[in-house]
Amino acid sequence: MGGLCNRTAMAGEGGLPTVGASAKGGSPTSSAAAASDDPVGPVAVPPPSEKALRYYRSGNAIWTIEQVLGLALPALLLFTGLSARLRTFAAGLGRGHFYPTLVIYLVLLSALLFLIQLPLSYYVGFAREHAYGLSTQRFGKWAGDEIKGLAIGVAVGALVLWVPYLLLARSPTRWWLWTGALSLPFLTIVLLVTPVFVAPLFNKFGPMKDRALEGEVLGVAARAGVEGARVYEVDKSVDTEKVNAYVTGVGNTKRIVLWDTLLARLTPRQTRFVVGHELGHYVLGHVWLNILISSGLTLLGLYGVHCTADLLLGRFGGVFGFTRISDVASMPLLMMLLSLFSFAITPAVLALSRHHEHEADRFGLELTHDNIAGATAFVALQQQNLAVPRPGWLYKVFRASHPPIGERVDFINGYRPWETGAAERYGGRFRR
Ligand SMILES: [Zn+2]
Image (tube, rainbow, N blue to C red; front, top):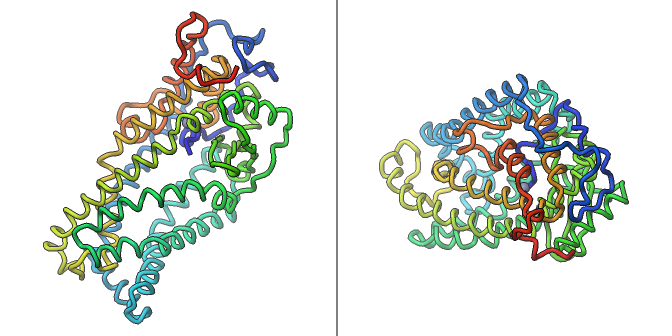
């Protein structure tokens, strides 16, 4: 959904920068957005706090552990023969029938992985966020959300996983092609269903309380060519200090969603820039492009699984306790090989994501002509979310879905083609 700052927008105690704060209701068009107390010259990127650096370093350690676990846990299930034993148990309960066996196995496997990872999930998702002052979530809400997430994962798995396994049995040489092709409609449905039916299971989506700002948001959307969208305010403040927004949906599900945390922490001018950025993702079709690319990569990944799984089964099948990939006990093997593949292509996927974010920043700027609001919004996010504005190259290559905040502020400070009469990349699309 291309949040402005999905990963980087966790907010801490840091306050809003004062610049631009008085510019409520400034016109979103042209340079009229500038206000009398705007800073002269470029907005400076403050150095990261000691606490932010600790959060960054410990986050990198946790990320490394998670990558290792993503491979080690499935391997453990395979090499101990546990996966095969789970399947035998499931087949006993399901009386050997294909679908009941698959679903019972899936429930057991999901529950087992959930429990093994629970201590780490609790630490990363709850204890650590509270320790850094980034979370407002009560334990009951966290636990409820975890269980809901598990249930949704199992339900979706039960709905779709029979397809590749049936294809594996019926078409052992082409299953990866059909499964990869089917991932396109599947991902499309996920994209359409998630914001409308899944997201409200976790948080309340209501109308925007500030009706004047809602009107401004709709005005910005109309100028970007997005008509007929509804604006929602989500009560994310029960979970987090993070801020986020997104534009999604088609037809009568078209929506601009703003977290209440964002509305509380950003000025109306900064909010307009954020909405402009999100509209950029929407108008430039980033989400659809991502679905297309994801399907292509899924196809490639499944082909990789097809080429390697039989080799591994030939070598270790005796230890695993199954010899055919069409056996549902192969699920950890598929997970492991797909994890390996997705890790290998992570730098390319993230580079494309950063490119999309950069273009959405450009779109938001050309739409609002409000460099100060854009740059100060990012400085506010950096302080609130304990972000490190200029992380190391390894972080950028393997973890950063968004450009580092320092680079975004640098770009925003310097990008003003409308002042020199130079061509804007997206300006021709706007309704002035
Ligand atoms: Zn974005």
